[in-house]
Length: 186
Image (tube, rainbow, N blue to C red):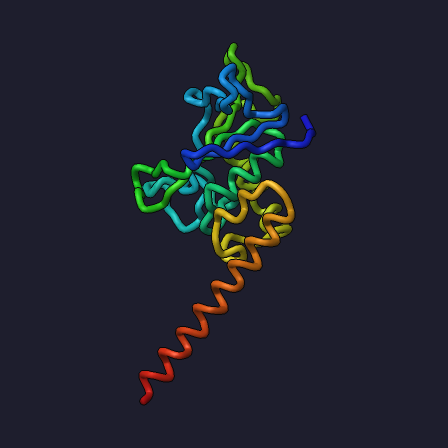
């Protein structure tokens, strides 16, 4: 299943990726998302170490990570060679302030697992949590990147541009805050 994943972006703030292409062009020339309504849903709360089981964590503390983001989970799913669908506008019912969820195609049309090592939802959540730890060691957590949407960019040049633009925004905000500190002392 190791293959290069492709990513498609549409105007509804949803992203799809898969090892086999993920996004297909329809007869009218518009991009069509695969039907992901029956795919497994992964909310960031399922993997969050800061939450209790009653607050929505569904993996043990041994595998859980601090403050996962839906975009990070989506990147990990794509790196695992699974077909995923990022829905940034959706929220978790137990904490509707945290936006984003990822749908993962775990089973085929006959309800058989696509991968033998990921035979159920629990195994998928644990595998994603383990891979997320490895991914963060390589790429850093969301705090490093600043804007989470900068992780969606499709090529390296866009990532470098967004990092430099976010660095410029951070530099300008820090200088304006230092000016505020000076004006308070007068």
